[in-house]
Length: 68
Image (cartoon, rainbow, N blue to C red):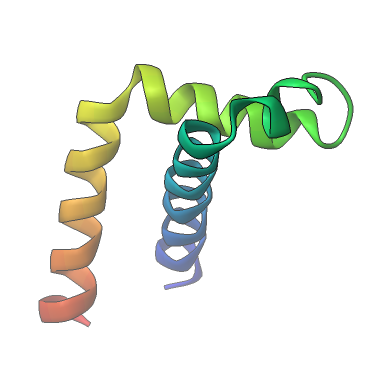
């Protein structure tokens, strides 16, 4: 059960970072290394793997709404 919540948090983090980078790219681009570099990496995953992330979000939403 906690693994499902972990996946949900990771997907939300990826989607949020990609959205923030689309609005203000300089905000995440200046922190490519270090602890804040995690957000830049999540944004890159969201941009490059967007079809896979979208499918995972749909599957996760379906499982949260109808299975749990």
